[in-house]
Image (tube, rainbow, N blue to C red; front, side, top):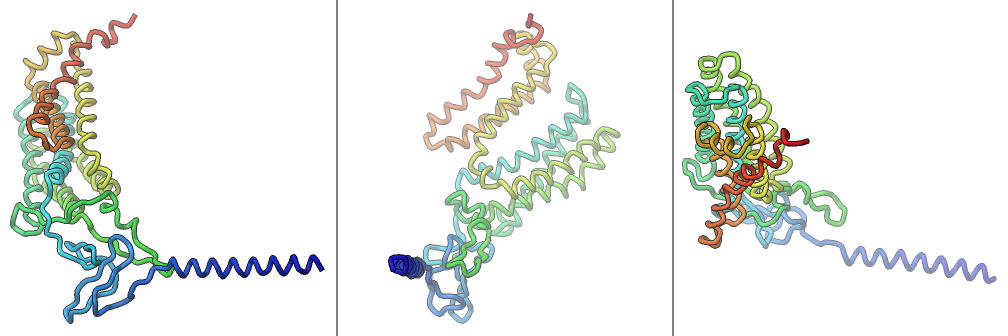
Length: 336
């Protein structure tokens, strides 16, 4: 008798628990109007929106068209923001990446410790190639034929990865709302890298065959590797690069500056100092490192306090001076 009552009590608890869970699930369910609606209504997720149709009604919840982004009322609204100063610095960084790789590959292919007219011509070619690609990219980005950019403001890291935020309301099916929420900061970099590759293939092979026959082609082959690699890295890590590129610039400029000095044959303090003054190649490379370092400082501070943040650029020569002053303590020949 006691066992029967215990079984009945257990059954009652199980049934009550199921009813309670169903009620809780029903109370937590997300209600939204599916399909085309007459009046604008809310959509689930962060990026799902409704587009206004020609007859005045609103489309089903989905991805907004390119150049549009969902507002607080879930309506797909045209992006009419202007890129901020930080956005322009980010685009400048993405432009400096292929240029830096081009110059480094040309220098490595030339295998010369001094500047010659042939090497300088290839340097100029790389600068022109990147500049042409950048100008064409700006001209074919809305508004077309202008150097101005109409963009969607970046609000958070998730804006770079809307693919990871497709909602599944009530577990009834995923709403695919992937779009370019940071239009056009994401897509225009792909266009720029592609144009860099095309312009290089139109100009560089002819110059390399005339100026550096035999060795010049290795710089072209290197570009055929690092440009696709940059495209893949941008596709995967664009958001992370957007928020971390100022620190990456400073760290890499300091490391590459130290590596440049480390390859000098004379590691004495007078030798390093005179090498920076007498050797034009070393001086240009040093000034390039300082420019990148200053670029990173400007990107971090964004010059919100002009005098204070501008004065930080006076620290740009510090890593080079630190290496020169401490070179006698780190010279491997002094070990033992």
